[in-house]
Image (cartoon, rainbow, N blue to C red; front, side, top):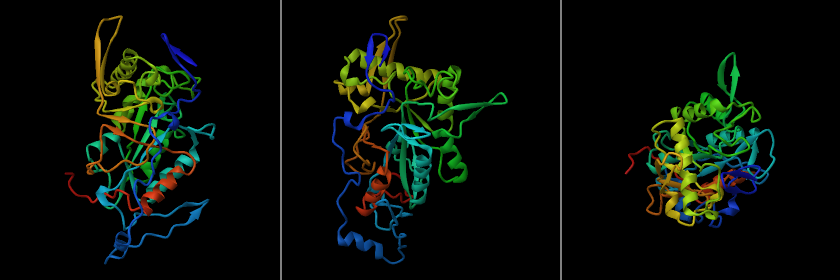
Length: 353
């Protein structure tokens, strides 16, 4: 347990946003019905390249490239949710580095390229080559396993064993895989979840490095997302606490990156506040100074629900997005369903409309 002021937060050694805590049921990751014979016939159109045959391993396909029969710009887009990338799997929200490296390579080989949440809602696919598909990485809870520094000869270097270090290294190997991901951060939580570690106990991090990490993300193509002050389960608290949690989270991000426009907010545990409007807009007055701080979020990230509709689809709701928690073979199975159901978004390189 941990305490902040008079508020009690119960029960997380890891700050995983439980899929069971959300208010909805898990949707079909494929997001659609199987293709008809007419749709399947698209694979045989003149000039169409055949996708390599799938190779099953543990019941999961390793098929590569983009299938010729797909939904084009009206397909669905995976929004992936990661937490701790560690040495081993210690819980539901922890995956090891070998698995994360596998995920990166799998997505690359199957024709996916990363974008941020903000790019998705803006229909900004400039980082996705024509004929390929966007994927959105989100990282919740600001653990040091996501982003740590190592001090070498008086200089700070990104720890290559962290998620950020692995993403940067993958970009160097594959320049067409841009440094894009959305990091949903906490600024006042315990157990090292304070802007990626606030003391040597947490992977040797130092408190004075916290703001530097957040600014580095903002300066290098990544998106910074608010995840509250210390991961309060918002449906358990009154409106004033909800607004304090979100406003103080936003205030901390602004302290690290002055003037940064926060567009995305991730619900702790996937739980909406009783007054849902407060997830988007609200204010908090500092009792010490009397100054009032406001916040405004365009998009709220939920925890479960599978790939989201295309932003060109009338059913797309940019004010809230579902995600897929990545553990086990969840990623492989989701990608296979998108391909087999012909519901995969493939960018055509055209002009957003």
